[in-house]
Amino acid sequence: MSIYTEEQAKAILDKVIALSQADECTATLSGSITGNIRFALNNVSTSGIVSNAQLIVQSAFGQREGITTINSFDDASLERVVRRAEELARLAPENPERMPALEKQSYKPSPTFVQDTADITPEQRAQIAAASIGPCKDNKLVAAGFLQDDQSFFAFANSKGNFGYQRATNLDYTCTVRTEDGRGSGWVSRNAADVKHFDADESIQVAIQKARDSAEAKALEPGKYTVILEPAAAAGLISFMMFFFDARQADEGRSFLSKKGGGTKLGEQVYDPRVNIIADPWNTEAPVMPWDQEGLPREKHAIIKDGKVEYLQYSRYWAEKQGKRAVGQPGNLLMAGGSKSTAELVKGTQKGILVTRTWYIRMVDPQTVLLTGLTRDGTFYIENGEIKHPVKNFRFNESPVIMLNNIEELGKPVRLSGDESPFVMMIPPMKLRDFTFTSLSDAV
Image 1 (cartoon, one colour):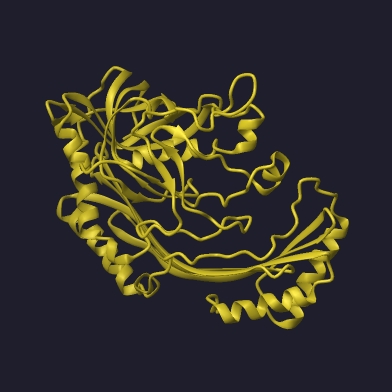
Image 2: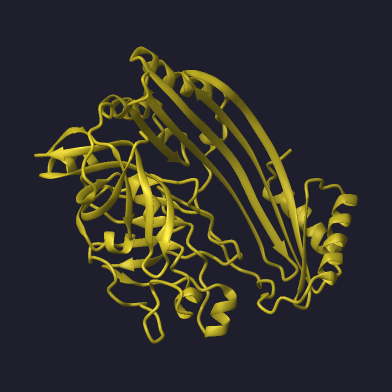
């Protein structure tokens, strides 16, 4: 058994807290059932279901803390894991930045659980794989993809009476379609909490079209171009930027939000006035857990408003040190946009480049958030509102800060969730000027 009801989870956590002899004890119980199916070369290669649950116990004596993990929940195992955490705590060095356990908090539940997603069957996964493979075979293309769906729960309690419980579901689908000669590549990614919002037939056609259209790519000289970034291409850059909204980094001069001579850019105009990003754990299109990793309640609030920085993330330790209020770290990023699709942005573009995907993004300069990465799986030249031909992929050097000051137009936001991002996102396609491509890449 790996999914526990609130009553069952609380019974286990209450036992752990009652067993504790430490100054403070926090226990976290979580579990999931994850189904998946993988296909490659137009054939299913693996499929399965993984079920798991675990208990994490954190015991503290003063500023010393020990942490242990176990996946057996009988009385003897609970006793053993609590005692081991206490043993480790006594041996641990003091952590001067350790914060005491949270007092009892109030958490407003968010709509993260959808029963239809939790009820996905192996037959449904097979049907999605078939819907992806069949059209590719019919068009003499080669599909490789992965579908993963999961239902999970998360519960925690501490010796100060704080308790939280929440269930969630999620579905992730990606598929790469190649031409048989390997010269064309198309890609599609979808994320949803509700399986009813996922259409395999529509999704595979996106990848098929791009695979066909991206063969016979022509080389363009690197340089600055007007670009249209599809939402998935923009999301990788924006989510990377959000790691630098940490208040401590800004206060200590280690962030692009640090001011020369001290202070931060909180409240200052850093972006184009059309840039608006909020966090809202109860958003119906992209809901997330109502608390963060420290157990702090999340709130609905602006992060960037009309281009001005409205929020910096204060950890509990740094908030206390600086005399600020700690707010739960955002779990989602909801960026405002317009009403146009990517295709409609293309129609309004005289000359430019359409980028399907940005990949292998890495930091170059944290003071400016200058990033480098590659385009892939469908990059196209636009002329007179039409896609004229595919182009060879580029390496880019670009800062999302500069990028979000070079906006020409924003489209309609869509839901995304990336492997390297901790956020669920709503990101629009973006038409941007002067995006910097530094060299060519031979990869498709």
